[in-house]
Length: 196
Image (cartoon, rainbow, N blue to C red; front, side, top):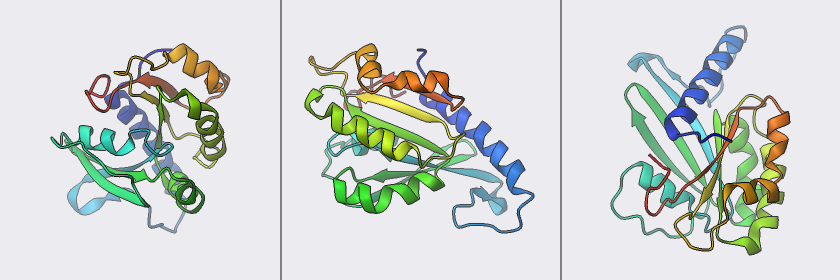
């Protein structure tokens, strides 16, 4: 599988957004998740950032925002961060990975998201099964055309698994038989490897 950079992922989100905007022109109602900001001429996208607790979601957001201090505490609920790139604006919903938050928050954010990022701790083999079940349960709530970027985090650790192993464990080959935009990438939110 080819690597999908953050910017390529952004491009796929843009393509999906254009398709959605075409379809929504026929609809009269507007929802709170509307993503066009007319007064500024900017386009805003929402991304749901998912994964079990301690997968490194908040660390990734801080690295993307180029914040120096990436020491984090567990996310209880949701952290909302905005990321600006030229005339594009992304709202990232960093969703807490503890089970109560998965049950109460994830579905509504996934359904509204223009794209989904799923992080797995590639060095925590003991939680792969739980993470796999969580991924496949919640990914079904995403829009059928929303791009999904599966990120194998903590690649800087010596016991991290490679992409082929993770792909087999998580049965990610299902996406190859599907028309949904998808890719998998190995990253380290701590060091920035694969993030930029």
